[in-house]
Image 1 (spheres, rainbow, N blue to C red):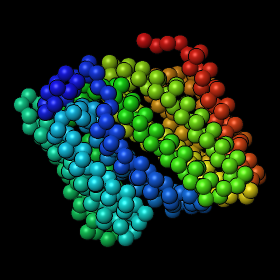
Image 2 (cartoon, helix red, strand yellow):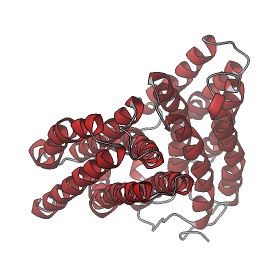
Image 3 (cartoon, rainbow, N blue to C red):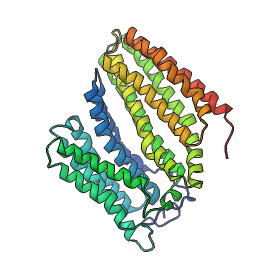
Image 4 (tube, helix red, strand yellow):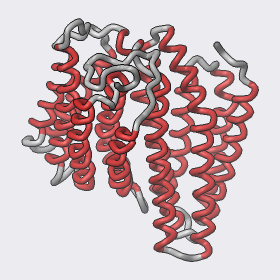
Length: 391
């Protein structure tokens, strides 16, 4: 038995049952430690528009695959041997995408595409079996269009030359997004059966992975440049990462549980979709580019940050707080209340952090970033304490 149900059951888990992330899901997430690390490598040093674009283009399909698999496990549980087998089958596919990503838009694009097709085939097998089970409200065409057709498109793109290959990638992803927005044949039943605690926990674990990658980047840079200035910059970088973690885990996750619960009770499926599938991607990207800039600063603390690292540090801070602000608004937090802490971010990032990255040596820019996120963390704490509890 798993969570009060047979381990080999194909039906969704009841939302009233306690559903927490198990060791198997944690093992599954290990592949994303590698994925984030490899994809973020292109952002180190002085990345330009091409490097930022490559990161976003290659990271989103990996994130999208993880988000879809996490929602699937949320509904069906990770205790089923069939689901465990499917997750194990997906891990090499994600590893292939990670290994191909350094040249994912050039010579290894075919391998990246086959990895993406592989993941979607795994999702199809899980959902198609559920659609065929007795009493399932899910029509057979839904997993065919959402999983199998995109898998076919990704596989076909592996044999196509650029730029046709990337057009097919865009069509495949767009098809999934459109079907996710259109609930025809699905209704609100899957959203009503989701475990909110599990969703928040899974997203939190992914953020832990990305924050862990940021710490690894800083420590690795310090190990290569073992000087007092690099050590000070590494310490300040740790403050930045710790404050971002504090904002997300101490105040963000509690608000997420309340917000998702309200959305679920009100059948606000668009809110659940946006705050689980889309907006966390922006938040994670913000942390990742901040980490790359911090690693660059630790490597050469006495010089002014290169242009790409400046964009990464300032843009990453804005992306992180913009995602949090959008999530808060989607959860029903008033715009005026959100602006209490998001407004200062919009003012201080260009007014305080931008001059620092332009004029100060790297260690000074990181010190300014640490002061900024510390101040914003205090504002978030004040906002959380002063906000009335909504029920």
